[in-house]
Amino acid sequence: MYKVIMVPTDGSGFDREAIRVALRIADRCGAKIKLVRVLGIGSFFGTGMAADGVVVAADVALTERDRVLAELYALAAECRTVSDADITVDLHSGPTGDVLEGYARRHDVDLIVMSTHGRSGLSRMSLGSVTDLLIRHTTIPVLVVKPPTSYLNPQVGKDFRRIVVPLDGSTLAEQILPRVTALATLEEAEITLLNVLIPHSYSRKEIVDPDLPWWDKDIAVAREYLFGVAGKLRRSGVAVTTDIVIGENVASAIGDYASRERADLIAIATHGRGGLTRMVRGSVATAILHSAKMSMLVFKPDQVAEMKKSPVKEGIRADLIPA
Image (cartoon, rainbow, N blue to C red; front, side):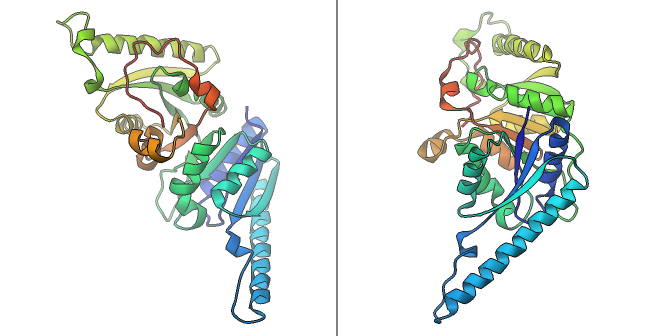
């Protein structure tokens, strides 16, 4: 269960959705909340042409730091009026993503909660460099809150009641299961294990009975696999269903299914690859993160876990390539 939850904040007000979710989770499991804000280096150091220009800029930066600290303390005080969680605040400077990653590692954070709404600062960047960096470089689960809301009236749902978990039979994909099970237990949510089959990835030579539809064998294999995983999760007290869909694009199939079933959350593991590999193979997790309307729990396992082979992968032919 969660012990320390970090919530990056930028003071825009659009991070309140993530804060509400973090407080709800913390109250249910007794976790500590750390509200963290990062100011750019320029907010602390300034330059000027005049002889006293640097002094003036430094004074302005110090005033700005004091103002931001006051905002953080006021935010923490507001949170304490609606939550019994242990709440602390921290203010740092530097590259936002790098600072947050280092902070989470040093403070033994086991869940990062952040919002995607907003038009400036961290919120504007959250679907780009900041969230992307955290997902690719930390092995801490990142809960990206995407409330079904308008710009003028942001409001997150009360609970994550329906959670979709895409699985492809790989050990990598299954690494999300302990993390999502913990969250589902706290939220009293139902988990749907989803397998996506891609028609063009199959060979007709694998058909046992040519009189049957070409995908029947693969559906049977996928169904058996999902039932096995579901059985293990049910023994931990979680409500679980399974489903299989056929589609040409994995990310679109997952997002469309989650929307159609009115899911509140998609939980997925990712390789967290970057650079050329990311460009060549693409990223299912990133594609869903950008296009799906619901919140996401994204987790990048460590390399040791990724290298292990799944005893149930043989026969699963879904082209779900977390990256």
